[in-house]
Length: 249
Image (cartoon, rainbow, N blue to C red):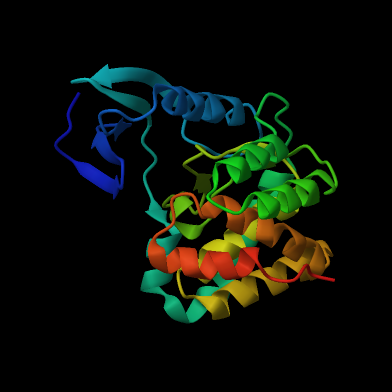
């Protein structure tokens, strides 16, 4: 495999292009179970109506795990926004439309969002009383079985030259309540100091879907708690404030 053309770099993985293939190469020591789970998530989502790159292979390269999937020509929505910032709201609307389509899908073999959140809360460094409160709150939330991306943000949307959107990076995919997924995207905007965009995103999503804002806000403490696990010190200060706010009425 040709690893000369790196097209993306994350904290624990690098993505390379090799002709009509992409190779996501994970750092040595990266969890084998997490790699296989990501590939399986993508393979399962391929069976829905969504446009996603197809998994071609899971392999090892010089002792590191790698997922090989088809290369999709295009720009991320993040890149498009950077080129046309004055139309940011139009692109957020596009993001919302795609997210709604994701939530319209069913994929019964995906991990349940509730179970994943419950486990992640247990892994945090939060006080045991707070963990118990959050897990009790989580158990009381309505149970749905919609496909959730888990990290739905502009950088995970590819737009091809013919304007076909593809959704990438399904490592966090689950099935459950759509509002948990929306709360996660809202939090992404807040953590990147884009409060104006965050507020527009949440307002528009609620308008388009008829979802009460308070319903999504009920998920915010749960999602914020799970994000404390690998947060930077600056992020942790912000997340702790969200986790410890008085329950929304």
